[in-house]
Image (cartoon, rainbow, N blue to C red):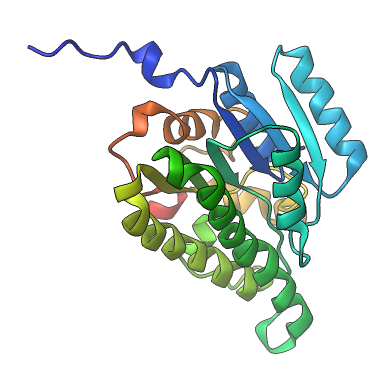
Amino acid sequence: MTQSTPLATLFDLSGKTALITGGSRGIGFQMGEALGEFGARLIITARKEDELKEAVAKFAEQGIEARAISADLGKNGEVDRVMEDIEKNDDRVDILINNAGTSWGAHTEDHPPEAWDKLVALNMTAPFLLAQAVAKRWMLTQKHGRIINVASVEGLQGHHPRMIGTIAYNTTKGGLINFTRALAAEWAQHGINVNAIAPGYFPSKLTGYVISKFEKELVNDTPRGKLGDETDLKGAALLLASGASAHITGQILVVDGGASVI
């Protein structure tokens, strides 16, 4: 009988480096805490340098090694600049979490084209460019890698008409879901696992307006009777980033308290 691998070893991320976009706050920071607790070194990106510095300091208080790169990934050339920074500092990327994203609320008939372009650039084009860049530099040659795309339950369903429309957000998150599946099928042969997490409603700057208006309805529509909290994504992120997910690829893990099943 083959001796089984201890579970602690399966989840151990010691010696791994994780690049987390939008990692300075919210669910990006939460996922960073999970990976860092199990030994990963973190590189986080976000637009605001003050929030990045605060996040790095918070990670340090927990004994997590992290550094930050300020970047607006929705702009041309920013992905290349981030890659150059990583290479210059003799880093590599073993785990990529495409978490940075944005939304726009408007009825579809009034949705500004420039807002559509902004969401496509950050929510879809940036994850594609980042996956391509880290794979070409490190993952394809090492025959190993983990890519986690942060999608949304909004990419799996329509937006409730009682709330203001989010057509570009739903569309880009839906595209990110099929991007995950297509990339997983292509790169599995190279030892690269590609999965997505589809969160429901978590309190954040992105969801703040909707929650302020509809929190009661959202909670009532969730079988668990609560919104996501500061720990609810940690297990999912750790699973998909670690050796425990070796035979899991192309999957969409919904973390919404059951809201999407009713």
